Structure formats: C-alpha cells, structure tokens
Amino acid sequence: MLNKKIKYPYVKFVFDVVGILASVGILLMIVCNTYANFNSDGNSSFGITIVGANFMLLAVLMVIVVVCAILSFILKLFKKGY
Image 1 (cartoon, rainbow, N blue to C red):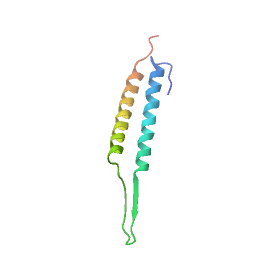
Image 2 (spheres, rainbow, N blue to C red):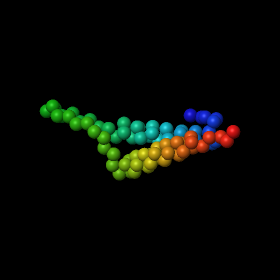
Image 3 (spheres, helix red, strand yellow):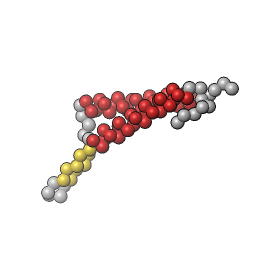
Image 4 (cartoon, rainbow, N blue to C red):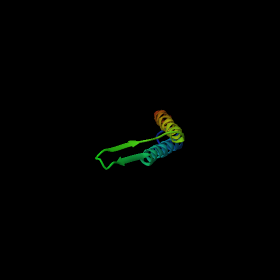
C-alpha cells in the first residue's frame, strides 16, 4: 500500500506488488498441479505433484516472496525526516 509518510513509498510499493504477484503465482502452481484419482473399488487419492522445472519455479517464487516481504518491512521502518 502506498504510504506518503515513509521515505521511499514507490520503492516499497514496487516490492509489495512483486510480492503479491509471486504469491499469486505460487497459488496458481498449486492449483494447476493438484490431482485427484478415484478408483472403482472405493479408494481415492488427492495430492499435489510438483517436480522438475515446476519445482524450481516454485522455489524461486517462494524466495521472491520472502525477499519482498523482508525488504518491504525494512523500507516501512524508514520514516521521513520532518
């Protein structure tokens, strides 16, 4: 959220937006890699399978979310000097 009382509001806003987009990417990956198997004998299984390049993309998105959250928090601590 854009806050004029901090020193670098637009930089913080960019990190917030990038973090939100990475979070949406993580949710989309989880939804797209979900499976459900139903057998005629009454057994069923549900789960998420993320392997290969999808796992690397998920790991990168998680790192982006963590870094953006930390930088956004740090930038929120810098107040204007007047």
